[in-house]
Image 1: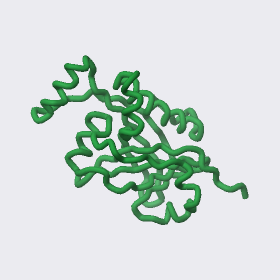
Image 2: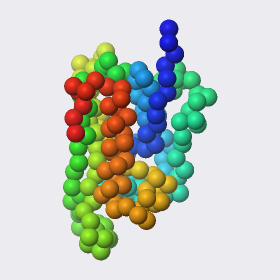
Image 3: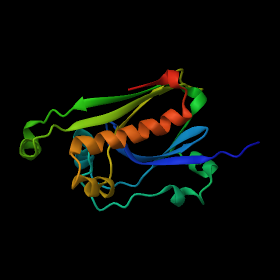
Length: 186
């Protein structure tokens, strides 16, 4: 039997939840995607704002690399109840979507920043539908929210929209390599 290959790591996505949004890194292998639960980097209020703005507000978190997970067995990652494993044969569809930011009254500084920068904040998110044994169809939605270590160096030469689009497109291309083309849409 051919061993499972680790192909890529998506450093950060945020999965919305009624109680508290959850931060994950996604380890992409040739057979499945493993959503690895990350420790909290910020509070509920800030994570919800990051999902709305598409960018990390807490910028001092250092992203893990694929090499950081080389010594950890895939079985131990999938055995952890905080993590989620999605085998590719169970994936029904994966769609990348974009939503416009609709600032609320308490987002005064965000609206002011948008106006000063002359940009709209567009947030990219994915919807993955897959089958589970217990549940005929399950959906996971995850927002593409890059860490400050990814965002800040690029911000000096690129627009916010370009950076967020590149982050989402890079993730979409990673999934294109492992999933059949008929289930992908953008």
